Image (cartoon, rainbow, N blue to C red; front, side):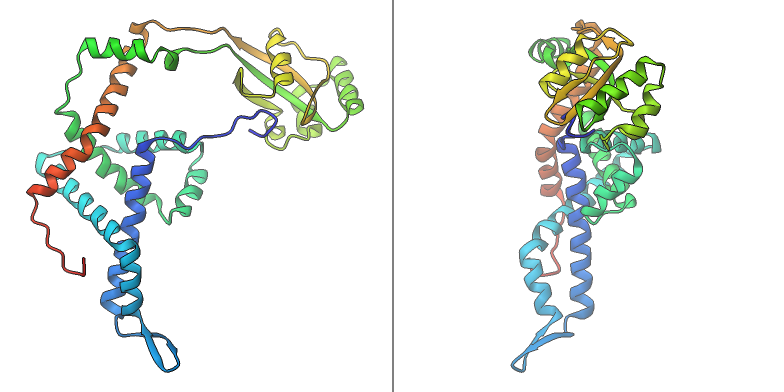
Length: 305
């Protein structure tokens, strides 16, 4: 989606941050430890005959990022050990489900786009899967201790009804032209039977939608600039607008499908409410539970700490 629609992906969600943060820090600390053990005496540079060796560089790097990275590695190991002790298994289906959730959180739709994001954090797909397994183990263990009753669920639904409301939506596609005259010429072609999608691929100047035949998917009010929104929502299904001028250019808009606003009943979303409450409670209990694991563990530091 481009600026024409204003639909920008949002990065949000504590789970995504936890997963990426754990693995990024893990990669760093493993590299630093190997760096220190294998190359401590190697000279990297001299300054007026004074040596800077790899051991000195390691200590500088460790002081800046190492302690936090090491603590994250310890936490990961503790969670894995606890999961193994309790016989917690994470299935391939659970892993894939978490990957799909993460894609949504990061605003990406394909595996290739996800890999691009992971590379920015110096992660691989295998790193991500390992972090998902660790997080899912922790979630499953904590979830087994959580109780959710009907009153809590109904209260949550009452307080968060706007989250479940489905606003009025229209499935729209458009052709963007640079001038009013060009848009008028394209509109005439449509009136004479030209295929909208083919014309969009050939003539639209919107790079974000032209390859999809101008398809913007379902949009809701507030997703686009006012002039575009007013025109799109005023159309009947299948109807094509006249030329619509916005700050981005001149649009021809077609409404493919319309959905009325819906406010679901509690029973319609009860399962989702229960899942949301469970995830919320897991997030709240996680730091307390993890600290209890650390308090019971025998943790011995073998490098400067």
